[in-house]
Image 1 (spheres, helix red, strand yellow):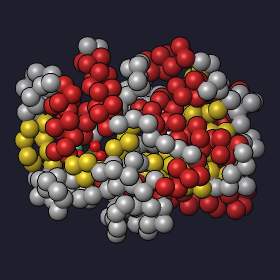
Image 2: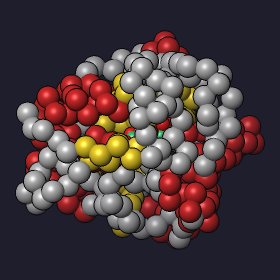
Image 3: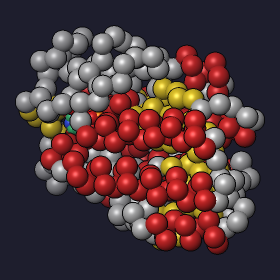
Image 4: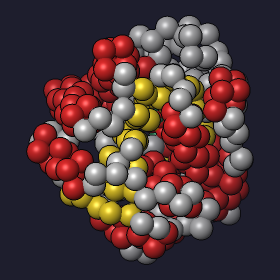
Length: 330
Ligand code: UFG
């Protein structure tokens, strides 16, 4: 059985679905602060999914999961706050929750001799890029508390590996987009801060305008370049990481991106094309903390995990749109 913390959230739920499709039993642990119980209910249709409502900051909550499910053999850890801007305004919230919560999880794992973990890390651990594409040897100098918390956890995992033999795979995600191909689940944040859902939300009447943050960057059209990776492909990277650990793989870390960058304007145009709608756009000043370009070098994930992204950007925008239509009707 696999324990998935944060399995009611956007990326976690897609991973649970993939685990189910691979015939694995799952226990989802989530405090539902940003995840949704409806998502968990939907996931139960795809396999053996148990749900425990609890908080990682409460050691008894997470320890209780290991007491109840004695056959947990690995953990995939998504539960975290993940908004960069919010982390700058309220760093304490991020350090306590992301680092403190992970310490409790790791303690419960050690006490129960569960010594394999796949962890959601982020491109934000690299900070301002010194070169593009970014490979895993790029210096990790985060420029916001969110990235700091993820990097601290990577370091903690290295120390626990040396001292206790706890092996980890850290997946450093770039920009995640899209929804499950059958649109059972998708991205559901409140408030939404991410690019693609924000563009798509602007095409449902009610006078909403999409705000584009900065068109004076040193890029091909002046807007920021990001590497957009499909959420189903990303979920699959976790399955491969789990298999890697099960086959005795050592602690490791991988970029999960596509090696391709797209500008905000290109994404905007692709959304207009997919929806067939004219979307209102306002150019606003730059958003604090946005680097001009972030693109992954994913060679290592391809070579060692055998990970291959199968979805195109248009696939991702299509599923994101179809999911957004569903959300609007909720
Ligand atoms: N953007 C807009 N308008 C919006 C939202 C975003 O113009 O309404 C722009 C941003 O300024 C940026 C780009 O679209 O240039 C992408 O922004 P997102 O907020 O979608 O994503 P980020 O690149 O800021 O952050 C994402 C994750 C982080 C992670 C980071 C790593 O949300 O958790 O990728 O690259 F750390």
